Image (cartoon, rainbow, N blue to C red):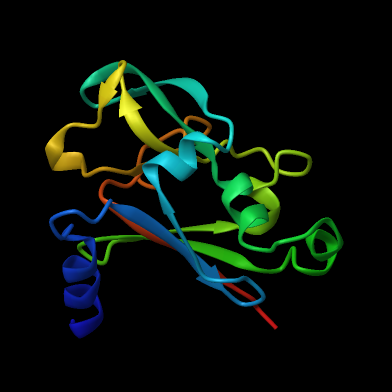
Length: 154
């Protein structure tokens, strides 16, 4: 419970402080990404239909965030047993294997999105969310994303 409260408090932006997403974990350099930094990583757009209808989301592949935080080509093969845990402000989490989010290996297209239909995400969705258009259901496409953690299964 305290962990969830800490995440909520960390996600509430202070005046003058840009909202960000933290990427950290085993073998990574903890890195906080602001919207401006994310936009420099090569945005992509995806079409995805959720319970509100079809939408176009703009964001960046989660794989790029991992690479920026120190996940290297060499580590790819050694670390495929690792998991990614995406965490929302309310403590909700979605889990992915590293192999599934790497474009060269896995089938999942996992996007950290900041824009929906050409506009910022709706306020109730937060500044950032995950969009996983390759999933058949939207359970791992979480709102109010604040952290992505790499956990090695060794």
